[in-house]
Structures are given as C-alpha cells and as structure tokens.
Length: 280
Image (tube, rainbow, N blue to C red; front, side, top):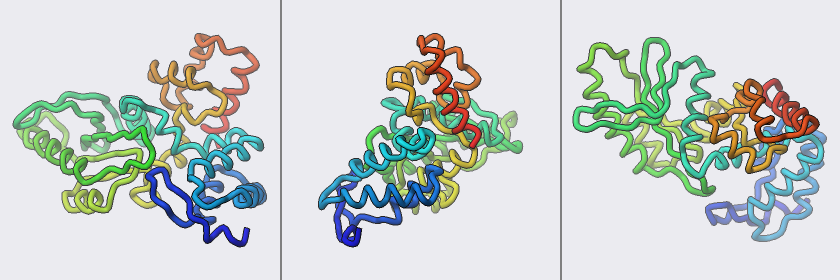
C-alpha cells in the first residue's frame, strides 16, 4: 500500500489524476460501512491498483466488496451511478428533483408551460414554498465525465428573465424567487461564476458545499429506485415508466412488484433493502 499515492488513474472524462486514498475512504464511509470494513476494503482495492487503472474499475471492485457484506452499503455507494441510470431521457430526473423538493416542504408541479413576455416556455419544475414560487430547470447527463458548462445557466437565465417579465404583470401569481438550475453532474468554474453573478441558484451533485444533491438525498433518505442492488434493470425501467422514481414510492406502491411477477421470497428481500434505505 506504500506506493499507491504515486499511481495515476484515469477518470471517466479521460483525465489522468493521482490516486487519492482519502477520496476513496470518504466515498466508502458515505455508504454507512463502519471503520473496520472501510479499512479492509481500502487494503484490498489498493493492493490491486496499477498504473492507468480507471476510476470505474476501482468503483466496481469496491462496490462488489461492499455488496458481499451488506447490500444497503452497496446501494448507497452507487448513488451517483444510480442517478445516471435514471436516463436515457431527463424526465425521470425531473420527477426525482421534484420529489426531493416535495419532501423538503415545497408544492411541486412537473412540466409546466409558462408564458414569457416574448414566447411560451416548457418549464421542468415549478415549486412553491413560503408564499414564493421558484422556476427550476433540470440538466440531466446520462454519461459520466460530462460537466455542465456556462452555456447552460446562460440559456436558462434568458428563459427565466422572459418568464419573470410576464410573471410580474400577472397579479395572481405568488412572488417569483430566483431561478434554479439543477444537474446530476458538476458545473464548470465559469458556470458557477455566471450563476453567482446572475443570481441563479445552481444545484449539482456536490454544490453548494454540504447542500448538494448527494447531501440532500442522504439527509432526507430519498434514494432513487435505481440504487437497488436486487432489482434488475428491466424491473427498474418498468417502475420508472410508472413514475416510481423513489425507493419511498415503492414502499407505498409495492403492488407493482406483483405486476412484475416477483416471488414472495424475493419481494421480501427487495422491500427489506428498500426499508433500510428509507429508514437508516
């Protein structure tokens, strides 16, 4: 383990970076695994490192080791990948963002057509809380390594301004709060700088610090259905097609597992895994 800090690994973007033991340790702790298990997995993974190994290979090895111990650890560890699996379209991601806001006390409407001063706009999410309305646009990427560049907040800001110009003329509306841009990846430095300057609220996987998507999901235990290690890809797509985006929704709508022909024994295991995710 004494040479791991000199090894270069390849990120999903193709960029080569030095392997970071601390980053891997943090992501393993994030799964809920205890200190002993984290250190055991670190030891096994670092023994298998080689020059030019991909982050995906490291992830797969750590994921397999976590799954051997407890499926719920593996589920939490795969959260980032699970959100990519909401694709290929961005619609389940919009529903997922809407659900997070709903559980945070917002009244939410998905896919709303709003008039602007110049043209009409299809808005991903309109949320209301504390007598204020918020217009939210979601930018979903289903490929790892693609960040949200400055063009996204630039474009969304212009749409928001058009909606806002019409909004203020309509006295029936609740006051409009700042516009939001939400992505499942990361924003570039330019995108963050523009968002700050234009007074747009940017929400990404890890921004704002300690209040990014991953933090909100963990805090509220609002895991997407795609984190399950026991459901097959076909079953996940069936559930997403019926707007079951959150694990919490499957607890409420467990009859869908009967529609899928899931055996009683397997159904019990799936619901047990889901229950541990929703009630840590």
